[in-house]
Amino acid sequence: MINDTRFQLLQKWIQNTLKWQGARIEVASADASFRRYFRVFHQGKSFIAMDAPPEKEDTQPFIDITKRLLQSGVHAPEIIAEETTLGFLMLEDLGSTPYQEVLNNNTADGLYKEALQALITLQKADVTKLPHYDKTLFLQEMSFMPEWFLKTHLGISLTHSQQDIILQCFDSLATAIAEQPTGFVHRDYHSRNLMQVPENNPGIIDYQDAVNGPLTYDVVSLLRDCYIVWPQHQVREWALWYKHQAVSAQLMNDIDNTEFLRQFDLMGLQRHIKVLGIFARLKHRDGKSHYLDDLPLTLSYMLEVGKKHPETAPLIELFKQLKIAGQISTVAIPA
Image (tube, rainbow, N blue to C red; front, top):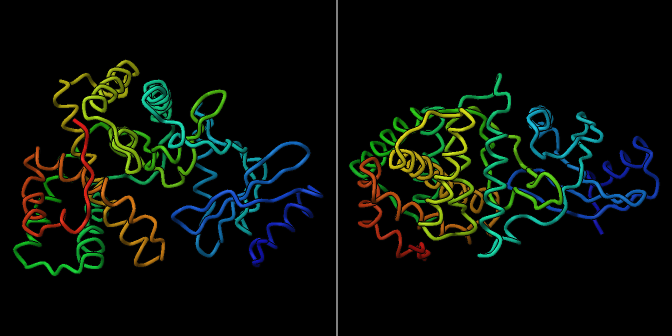
């Protein structure tokens, strides 16, 4: 039985303010932030209650982005009720079946194409006043990796020359991706945040950190997911399918497939470098050790893709010298 102050406040809000007498409340999930989610059953229907402690989480960005996404036509959850002072929202229930649970060799092509088509729609959403995902932010995010992954998690003290190699690679990478076409970016578009739903699939969640940034970011988040891996040839095929749809939708100019795949790779490298640091930080700062289970695949993407590009090849060579792969069991990326 849940017994904490926040939960008691949530119960009172549901029963006294919403007048949902007799509603049953169950834990649904928590995420990497301080937010928690509860499934609420009332009059034969289910809803999702978000608990976002106002001293730690601001619900306003979630509300704002939800409205933008619903206006764009993608399947974000409708907001049924809100109490921003307390940090509570009541949302449409998009079910309990994330893509991660239903993706397999038989379903993947259909599910990914639905997700990529939804992404095209999402990328047309209003970006007015959204933060700009730019070189400064790319560099800031990648700095998590040497601080939390190398230093804190692996206990590696870098020399000045090694630090210079990392900084130079980061700068080259950030400069290259800052030149890519931009639009609405979900920023965490992957198999755990896409829900399989009966209509207008997929249901999309966890988008409150949306920004105006490179279009390839969400594509690579989906296709080089930190939680599930696909053969490289299949990833390329899906990425180019997206590119064709994005060009048709006038989101980007038509470019050579090789150049698009280069942009896709470089954006993925920025993301995976960042995520190595974030997963380590979640473990060492926030006590969420299960994220370490996802380090091997994330590192594998970085090593495999990074060696192919001059922007990151020196960083991969440094990782070889430091024997990073020997300290983290990497995952073989299918050809």
